[in-house]
Image (cartoon, rainbow, N blue to C red; front, top):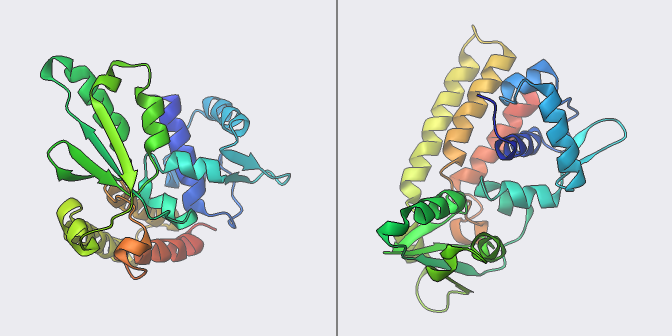
Length: 247
């Protein structure tokens, strides 16, 4: 099935981010397309690239190398929130999203949940979700002028009472996420030590395993989880493997 434009955009942005700014690459090389599961219909992909260049979420050097821009990182973070605080500083604010949509408006509820699923939200109380990500502007674009305006409330501000540790334990299941990362580390070791795999096959397996974790990582800033958080360690390890296997 041909990926939608939005999915194609996200996949290209993710590929550019994972490849790294300092790595020379051809997005349409067979190796890159296979490792990062880019759509094989290059004509459609090139059309998407032209639109992405126009939208200034990617840029192209005279040498032909593509890079993701800060605007591109911000867009990618709406699907993979982990990338945001690798690039941008945290402003110290939390955003609280509340919605109670009646069953008869289920289609709106399901649509809202799909749209916000990658915003790093964690359940605080019933119908209350919290995130450190700056999602208010995106939420306004999503709800203004629609039926969702009747059911959605949002707030933002700094924590002034209570322990951050308590908030983390209540809202985000970090032990479970850490277990996912450790499982990925084990898988990476197995892939790298498999002598029957080519470099390309090893990197494809590493990327697939990594994305399974990144889909669930809320992308919390180091001010909350600490600079030694396993997610930061995983990013460092991934970059080392990428530099070895993607040449």
